[in-house]
Amino acid sequence: MQADLPARQQALQNMQTDLNQAYLVFQTQIEQIKSLGQELNQATALQQMQAAHGKYIETATAIHQQISKWLEAEG
Image 1: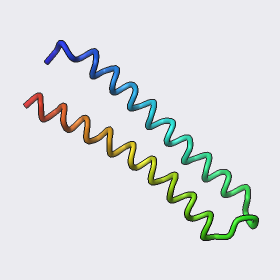
Image 2: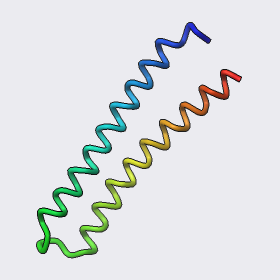
Image 3: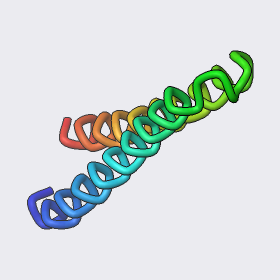
């Protein structure tokens, strides 16, 4: 199991990067929605925020699932 530790560490680092990028997209969307204010109707703003939040949750869930698989493999 130790032999694949560097690969797991790299995978975790890559997942952290993905999670950070998804979070930045989420934050950017929120800022854009705030700045647009009255230009967007509430339904469109909500859809954009939900989509960005969904991507963030999707990425975090994938990371959690991978870590769970690794932990199960460790026994």
